[in-house]
Length: 288
Image 1 (tube, rainbow, N blue to C red):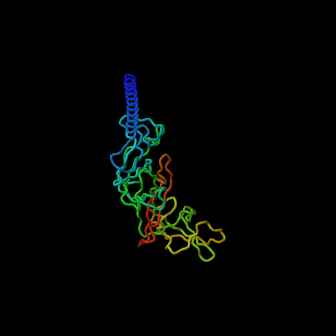
Image 2: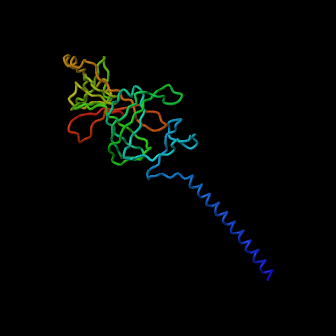
Image 3: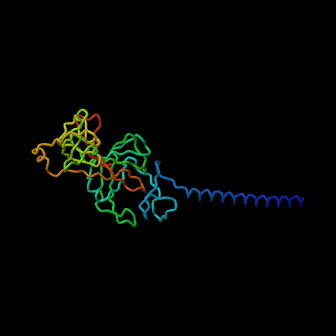
């Protein structure tokens, strides 16, 4: 009996040791789970998470960047109030005004468009990079309507509408030629071409408004015809030339071909015709 009691005591002691060992490992597992939960960031609302801007570079945070206490790393934006951020050089900045209308298209959303207006223009420039002497100006635009609401962080192509010119005749710049300090076009007349003086109004690198010299019904050559097929020069009356002798307005177009993070601004612009549904022959001056 004494032996049995001794064995029973030993067994109970061993069992207690095993139970304590199990409890210790259970506590360790729970502690590891708690630490893992602490390493998992949980938002207080659902939505799309996007990287914040680095305090050091001003660009989107990426793996390997330095971080500081209190520095936001990820944000969940409010999709009810979306905006587009752009940059412009000083020359480009001077072309724009508050509330200028903008049309947006997105590389990641082919065929989808959005529309808005300029809502903020920072009047003080900043260096485009830490070592550059070139300054840029920050511009923000709203997204007021869209065929499909874009996700935050997408790159965007912007067409900024600068001016609307009603009831005009427009030609490609390729159709305009300089002859003896005159602007001329070559109008088709049967098998030959008539060299005709014209006067241009608002222009861009691609197109030009013709204020005198054409009716809008002519066939105009985009290349200079052979000299043996060109008739004499048809000049405009002096009275008409004097009427338009005031300085011609020219709209420089040079900005926002592609606003994409990490890429330089492209140069370019155009005078675009209105949609086919328009009730007149207006054009719209835009920056692309």
